Image 1 (tube, rainbow, N blue to C red):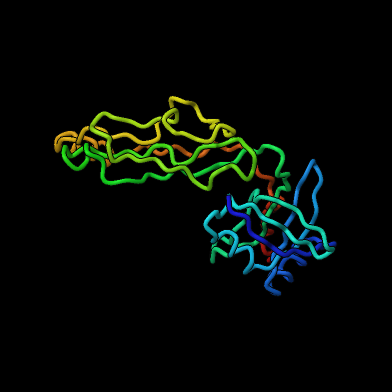
Image 2: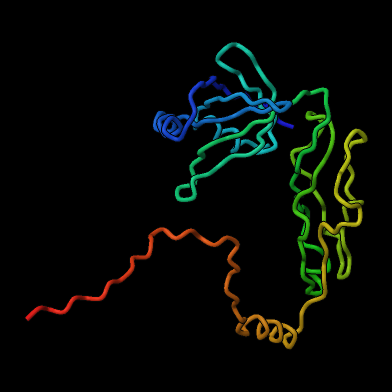
Length: 230
């Protein structure tokens, strides 16, 4: 797994106002967790984008160089994006030890030529499982798992049990879970039946009220109007 460097600084101020100020300066607030403890940090926005854009992406091992002179090895635990412009707003890191096993989610990539069952018999390739969890030492966990589906005929499948990893690694998914398969082609009649069923109107139910909202305005008792005196 690729290791990348990232500079960070300790921060002792929190709050939405301070976070907005950091973002205007080209930095984002971050937190590094370990053993139930958390360390508030701030990192350069461009640098964290480089980490996420690297070959390892979210699976990268990050050597965080903190301004106080210390260095920590961490992985990205989570990050928050602006729903409008997609900019990174916040990042969470999890400090790890290179000598202790961790669990990471690794993407499964389909490689090879077009499957035989698709090219010669018109089958349909179904890509079912796109990622699996792997347990092992951080430096041993691969950035991705590649599965060659070119030999699959109609009715064939590749399961988790067919994936080979290093002896010191363990895939945590069920061995019988299907990664990719080739299914028979759908006839025109069957396709039309599916499309017709999909297009049928669906009865919409009102959402269930989980919690009754509080009334924001008090009801004002209406008083009868007085008749004009003659």
